Image (cartoon, rainbow, N blue to C red):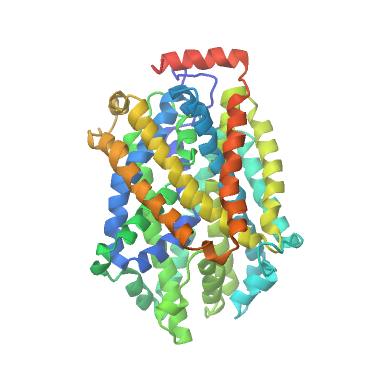
Length: 509
Ligand code: PHE
C-alpha cells in the first residue's frame, strides 16, 4: 500500500473489494426492470447478439478506460480530466454532476421500495396494484404543474434512503468494501429464491418462452442495436464518473483489464438471470388472468410496482414473505448504485479542497435530501420521469462521447494502453484504441441524433414544451454553469503542489 501514487488517498482493502464495489454499482434496478423487457421487445433470445456485441465493442472498452483513468490519475472525474488539460476540469465537474443528478432521482425508486416493503406485510395492494400505486402510494396529481404537497410516507422512505447512504459513506471506501459484501450477494440470493418460486408456478414456461424465443428478423432493425448500446451504457454505470471514482482508490499494482471484464460479465449475467425471474412470474400472471403474456408485461416502474406485486398477491401461499423478499431485493440492488453515484461526485471535493469524507457525506446528503423532496410531491412522478429521460438519453450520451474523444485524441492513448497492459492478466490490443477513437463515439452520435430528432417530432410523453425545457434541458444547462463555478474556485495552495507532484509521478506532465 505504501507504494501507492498518493499515500494520503484512501484505498480499497483488496482487488476483490474493488470488483465487488464496481459490480454493486453496475448491478442495479436497470438489470431487473429494464433488461428483461428490452430483451423481450427486441427479439428475445436474438437480442443477446446485439447486447453482447455492445458489451464487447463499447461497454468493456469504456469500462477499462474509466477504471484505468481513475487508477492512473488517482483522482475522481473532475480533477482527472483537469489533469489531462486544465479547462477539461469543467467537463469533469459536469460529468460528475450527472451522477449527483442521477442519485437524487434514483433515490425516489428506493423510497417507493421502502414504502412497499412496509405494505408487503399485508400485501396491501390487493388485486388492484395499479390503482394502489397511483392513488395510495404516489397520490399522483394530474400533471407536472400540479405539484401539491409532499406525500409523507414517501418523504419517510426518502429519509431512510439518504440516512442509509450517509451511514455507509461517512467512513469512506473502506466501509464501502464491507457493505458490498452484503449488498452484492444478497440480492442475487433473493433473486434465486424468487426464481425457484417463479419456475414452479403454472405458466412459467410460457413467460420464459416469450422472453427467449429468438426472432432473428429483428436484428435487421437498427433501433434494436441502438437500444442494446443504450442499455449497456446505463447498466455498466458508464459516463457518470462512477467508475473513474472507484478506480481512483486502487493501488498501482491492481490489474484493470480483467477486472473490467469480470465486472461487465457479472453485470450482464445478472441481467440475463433476472429475466428468468421476471418472465416466469409474468407467465404465471398471464396464465391465471387468461391473457397472453405481452398483455401483462410492462417495463420500468410498471413492472416493479404493478405487475410484480400483482403476481405476488396471486401466489398460492407466503405472499407477504415473497413481497418482502422482492422489495428487499430492489433495495439492496439499488443502494450500492446510489452510494457509488454520490461518491463519484463528492470525491471531486476531496481531490480539490481536501474536504473531509464525513463532512462531504453529511452536506451532500442534506442538500440532496431537500432536492429529492420534489420527487415525493404529488406531481413528483412526472418530474422524475423527465429528469430521468434527459440525464440518461442526453446527459450520459454526451458525456460518454466527450470522454472517448478526450482520451482518444488528447491523452496519448497508445501509451495509456501500454500502461494498462503492464502487469495485466489480459492484454488489450490496438482494437481498444480503435473502439474508443472511432467506433464508440460514432455509435453515441447516432444515438444522440436519434434522441434529438425524436424530441423535435413532439415533446416527450406529451408534456408541455416549457416543462421539458425546464426539467430536461434546464437541468443539464444549469449544471454547465455550476460546473464552471466549481472549476473556477481555486484549489488549496498546498493541494495544488500535491496535485502537481502527483501528475509528474504518473507521467501526465
Ligand atoms: N447501473 C445502474 C443500474 O443498472 C444505474 C446507474 C447508472 C448507476 C449510472 C450509476 C451510474 O441500475
